[in-house]
Every structure is written in structure tokens, then in C-alpha cells.
Image 1 (cartoon, helix red, strand yellow):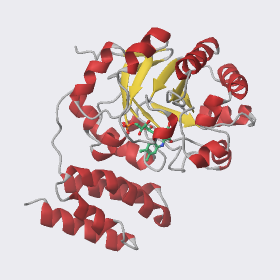
Image 2 (tube, protein in one colour; image 1 turned 45 degrees about the vertical axis):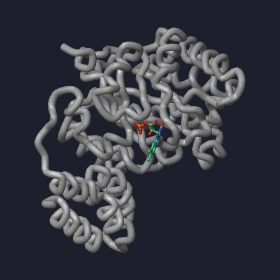
Image 3 (cartoon, rainbow, N blue to C red; image 1 turned 135 degrees about the horizontal axis):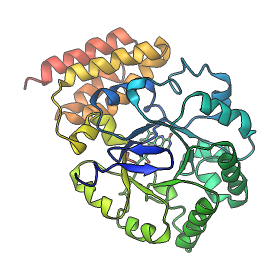
Length: 321
Ligand SMILES: Cc1cc2nc3c(=O)[nH]c(=O)nc-3n(C[C@H](O)[C@H](O)[C@H](O)COP(=O)(O)O)c2cc1C
């Protein structure tokens, strides 16, 4: 058995293989998770970051952000918090979702999220962060993970990062996922994989590596890390978990796109579905040499009927070249 397929047990969860779908706002909703589940090959799927207010008011069984199908297996529910919330009802709602684990978003550097005091802003604000971690730990008996970047690229970032890792450990966090980019880098440059070696020396927490994982070259990271998390490449290739952990599955590009289209329509109201299908297609188009044609066919489509016929025309025209 290779390192990827040896089960990773953390608290009450066993992840096998040690592969995770990254939380992605606008992408890792129920329709996309269902598509990933069709191919399998992962240990768990993360939801996108969920806001406490949405969690409290939405119907958890029908909302595409919280609903889950048995086929998905373990689903980790990610939340974004700023420390001002009443966490008792929020955690109760996550318990009602049958979450395999709860993850706290401490990495999102997007200005809209930082402005609210969540994501990277909570990572920075250690006085607010402490009670959030302790409260989640006291309310949630299951696996509790956090996901972060390495902080701001200014003097002393290593100390600041290590101080937070100590805090995670002392607050009862069970699992750490790191995307080794600095906060101001968005998704530019490259993930600093070489830092995992150092991060490993800073903590005994099980460590999940994230950032720019695209193929089997990343398996080498398992020398320092306990699992791998894939974001954008999984949107391009929802079968990537199966490919990495087992073998390349057989599939038809057009059929997979169409299946995602139909899954999205099943889970979202029509007016919301179109955005999700366009977002997915941005990544999916990267599979094709003429992918920009798919992008150009889909993005300006004003309605679902036009979008579908434009996309199908692309597949018929270009897949046979
Ligand atoms: C469209 C998009 C939405 C994202 N939303 C979230 C999110 O909700 N929570 C989070 O922790 N990270 C979010 N991320 C960051 C990813 O989880 C991941 O850390 C990042 O994309 C790097 O991994 P990758 O190179 O495998 O894509 C998002 C990334 C993308 C591209």
C-alpha cells in the first residue's frame, strides 16, 4: 500500500485515501461534491466556507451549501467566524448536518471576508482567535480542523505562525491544513512546498498540505505531511482523486460536463445555477487545447438553454479534432 492509500485516522475519522477536496466558495457545493463522489478516490470533501448567519437561517437539507448525499462519504463543514458570534446555535446546526468534522477558515485573505473580521483577519487577531478555538472545542466533540496560510510576508512571520500553531495545539485543534502562500499573494506565484519540512518540525498535529497540487509529483509531500488537499485542479479534473489513488478512470468529457450541468440544476434554483455552471466551466475548460473557445461560448450566455447548446456545440466541434 502506498503512503496515499494508507488510512489516516484522526480522532473519530479515518480518511482513506489521504486526499481532500479543498473548500472553495462558489465551487464545492453539493452538486460539485456529488460529481467528485461519482469518481471517488478521496478521504473527505470540504464544503465551501459557510457563514454562521446562513447556517442559522437556511434549510440545511435543501441548501446546496449544506445538503449532502450519502455517496459523498465524509464531509467536512468549513465555517468563517469573526469571534462575535453566538457559537452554540451555529455548532448545533453543524451537528444537525451530520458533519464529519468542523473546519475553521483562518486563511481567506479576500478583502470582503477580512473586512468582517473572519478568515485571515481572525488568524491575525490572536485575542479574538483564542476564545473562538476554545469555544468550538468545548461545543464540538468531533474532529476540529483549521486551515490557514503562513501569514503576512513581513519580518517575524515564522514566530507569528509558530505562536498560532502552539495556540491550535493548546486549544484542542485536531488537524492543521496549510496553504503555504503569504496572505497578500492571492493564488499567484507558487505554493512554497519547501516550507512543509519546517512546519512539520513545529507541530505534532496531523498536517494536510494544500496549494498547487496537480499530479503525482505532489506525493513526495507525504514525506513531511499526512495528507494532500486539492482545490482548483479538482475542478478541472473531478476524477483526480481516483487517478492519484488508484488509476485513471474512463470517462467522456462531454458527459461529465453535462452531468455537472444536470446536478447543478437539481440542487440550485435556475437563476443561481447559471453562475455555478459558468464558474465550474472556467476550470473545466483547462482540459482542452481549445478551452478558451469553451470559455468564450459559455461565459456570455444569458440563460441556461443558450449556455447548454453553446457548450455542447464546443464538445461536438472540438473533441473530435
Ligand atoms: C474559487 C475558490 C474559492 C475558494 N474558497 C475558499 C473557501 O471558501 N475557504 C478556504 O479555506 N479556501 C478557499 N479557497 C482556497 C482553496 O481552498 C485553496 O487553499 C487554494 O485554491 C490553493 O489550493 P489549489 O492550488 O489546490 O487550488 C478558494 C479557492 C478558490 C480558487
